[in-house]
Image (cartoon, rainbow, N blue to C red; front, side):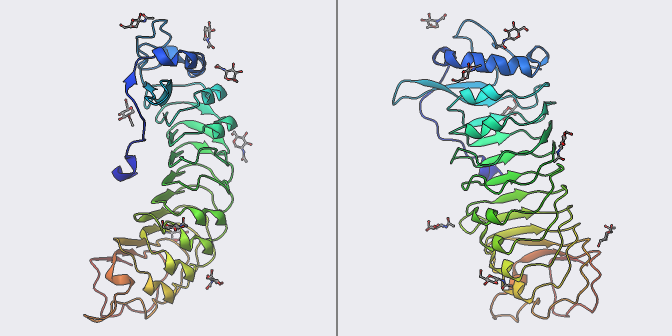
Length: 323
Ligand SMILES: *[C@@H]1O[C@H](CO)[C@@H](O)[C@H](O)[C@H]1NC(C)=O
Ligand SMILES: *[C@@H]1O[C@H](CO)[C@@H](O)[C@H](O)[C@H]1NC(C)=O
Ligand SMILES: *[C@@H]1O[C@H](CO)[C@@H](O)[C@H](O)[C@H]1NC(C)=O
Ligand SMILES: *[C@@H]1O[C@H](CO)[C@@H](O)[C@H](O)[C@H]1NC(C)=O
Ligand SMILES: *[C@@H]1O[C@H](CO)[C@@H](O)[C@H](O)[C@H]1NC(C)=O
Ligand SMILES: *[C@@H]1O[C@H](CO)[C@@H](O)[C@H](O)[C@H]1NC(C)=O
Ligand SMILES: *[C@@H]1O[C@H](CO)[C@@H](O)[C@H](O)[C@H]1NC(C)=O
Ligand SMILES: *[C@@H]1O[C@H](CO)[C@@H](O)[C@H](O)[C@H]1NC(C)=O
């Protein structure tokens, strides 16, 4: 994930002790019990009856407009959590950031977690979670989700949050196909479903993905996606990096992609697909002073193991080419 995505959540007020957040303690303690709190690496303050003692990883924030205090962040990253997740954590209704990555939590993600109204960032990466990733998240703020390196095994949800900026579902066992509806992710800048069991084809509709973002990294590598390369993806104007390697994609390489005008660095990786085709004649740099074409932007083009035949046009002078 990129540093630019980690811009902080807007919270008002100051970070205080647990005193304004006493009503959230039962839900936190239920979570503590269910995830083997006694064996956490750090649990300073947890369960303390004195609300002036802060709890490790928990942020209780005072809202200066209405004087109320709410838990806004729980960060227990890499803290030796085990057991399973608790449904009642949704009782922390103002939670914006829930970071539980790099632990040993198993079981499923509680379907009720869709009901978090203000969730902005959810990280459960590197655990032992399985089952489906819930769809229809209530929070319109949900922007950064990391479910990578688990054993999630359902299919990808048609409907997610349309304000999404970054999705990492890589290294799971997700099946089914890429949802055409994800074309509506206008602001997205990072989407990875690398190393899953996805099949089906590349949705033409995705040509609008990321149009309002700051540059899109799309990683679909190591799945079983078939079909052809959609000519319409030449309209993916914000594409920065496109990785389609290790799939079942067939040619041809679309002539139209030569007009793919990216404002940003562009890298195209197509290794290890059964593409057997010639390189389109349009895929070559234009003469100096001419109109810019795709390859004025491409810094890396990798087509290794793609059964290309024919010869490269002599005019090809990429910084890096791997065929
Ligand atoms: C969570 O909220 C529900 C509904 O308000 C309530 O019934 C339940 O007791 C709460 N659980 C905890 C652990 O706070
Ligand atoms: C946590 O576990 C302890 C010991 O088993 C039990 O006494 C306590 O009621 C539990 N608390 C919650 C909130 O589940
Ligand atoms: C918390 O600290 C404040 C200010 O020091 C004090 O007035 C209050 O009594 C303390 N609360 C508890 C439960 O100890
Ligand atoms: C969460 O906690 C981890 C480990 O304590 C820390 O490295 C990381 O910076 C924290 N993240 C945030 C967003 O506070
Ligand atoms: C997902 O994995 C769980 C646990 O291994 C299993 O019970 C369930 O049937 C699997 N679901 C699918 C759709 O494969
Ligand atoms: C992109 O941004 C423009 C201007 O802010 C807006 O009118 C348009 O609806 C946005 N497109 C999408 C798909 O959200
Ligand atoms: C490309 O997109 C247009 C407009 O959405 C559509 O009419 C057309 O069928 C699509 N496919 C191709 C191959 O042009
Ligand atoms: C080359 O691609 C084929 C599929 O087209 C794949 O089966 C094979 O494993 C790939 N070879 C390497 C070295 O990646």
